[in-house]
Image (tube, rainbow, N blue to C red; front, side, top):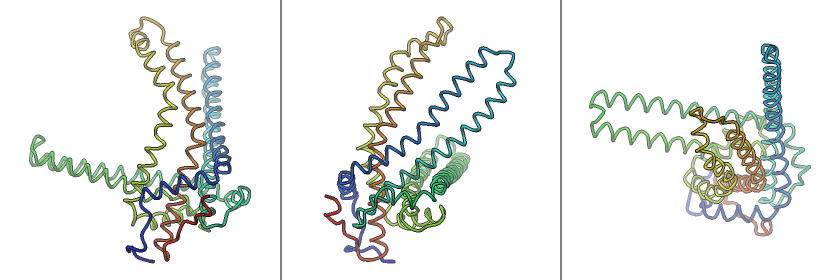
Length: 323
């Protein structure tokens, strides 16, 4: 495994971002079509939840004497909904990873059709779900453990020197900053965890996570900067999607305050908020069609560059694959 040197180093964050934009534009229609499919898989659970909630509420309201039977039926239906969520989420994750595979094929001048790439990844659908679950568990367990350790350490210092001592405050600040840095470093090192599963012949989620970790940990700083810059580009779109909900919340806040005091019924305000929230969620899903390909292209670029950095002479981005 090649070490880092001046002639063999990963792309800096700005170059990664610039290349991601070029890659995004080079196969825009193809990537958007896959992103549309990935986003579409998120709709069935949302629609099913709305229908189940409406039906459950209607039945309970109209048949108050059958609450027990209705509750049992609701539990069964909601368990079925959870299965639907897992299936649809797995399909969405597979199509999202498919974008990274298509982008990587473009980078190595070995482009694939959507059908060809999907044929490779279909059999790994549930592995992408398991990869996502494992990454989430790792982040949760490590973050929870760090927070517990920091809380214990701060309590011990405060017990010895007093809660108001300057040393206790300094120790608390340093430990919390260290915990924050560690949490972000961990997220950065797990950022491309699903890409090896999509691109390589990795047969398990654990292997894919380990592979992504080994490639990323030596370049966490540049990856973090690239993520931050990409976030600054895409965050305004997410904020834009929630403007209807925010405006509705502001418009109805006085109504909700009065309703909380029992002076007027709150149904109108609640319905308005739920409707605006639904609109915002649908807008987020729509904007995701344009955002997902950008992020997955960035992941493919990071993976591509890190492989060149670790495994041999630095791989060069080929201009003809980005035009």
